[in-house]
Amino acid sequence: MAEKTTEFVCQSCGAVYRKWQGKCDACNEWNSLIEEETSASSLPKSISGGSKGRKIDFVSLDGISETKPRTKTGISELDRVCGGGLVAGSVMLVGGDPGIGKSTLLLQATGTIAMQKGRRCIYISGEEAIDQVRMRAIKIGFKRS
Ligand SMILES: [Zn+2]
Image (cartoon, rainbow, N blue to C red; front, top):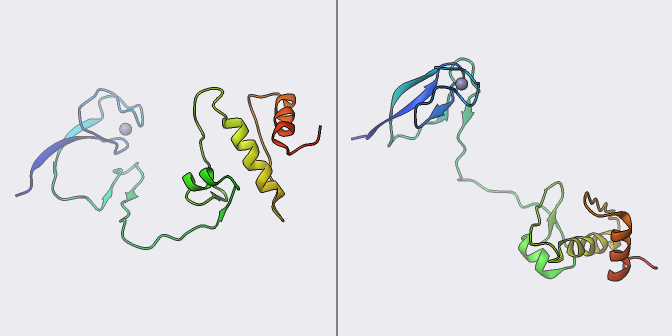
C-alpha cells in the first residue's frame, strides 16, 4: 500500500513545499499554500504548476548520451580532471586558495590551446591587472619580454 504524505501546494503558482509557510517563495503570494495528500511510492510523471505555473517533465536517465569533442589543454592533469579536455561552450569553475596557481594554470592552458592550429583563445581576468597577466605570460614562456 502506498504511504500517504502531505505537501503544501501554492494555489497561485503551483510551487510545492514540505512544510507550511505563510508566504510562497516562488510567487511571493501570502496564504496561498494548501495542504494536499500525496502518495510517496508513486513518482509523478511531471510536476504541474496548476493553472499559472510551468509544467516540468521528468527525464529518465535511460538512453544514450552524445560525447562532445574535447580540446586538450596540453596539461595532462587538467585534461584528466576535465574528462579528456575542454568542451566547447561549456563553463568550468576553478577554485582554490589564493596563490595556489589557478591563474598560472589557466594562462598556461589558454596559451597552449592558442598555439594549436586553427584555435584562438581569450584570457579574461576580472581581478588581475594587464601587467600581472603580461608578466605571468612572460614567466611561463608564452610572451617575449
Ligand atoms: Zn506561489
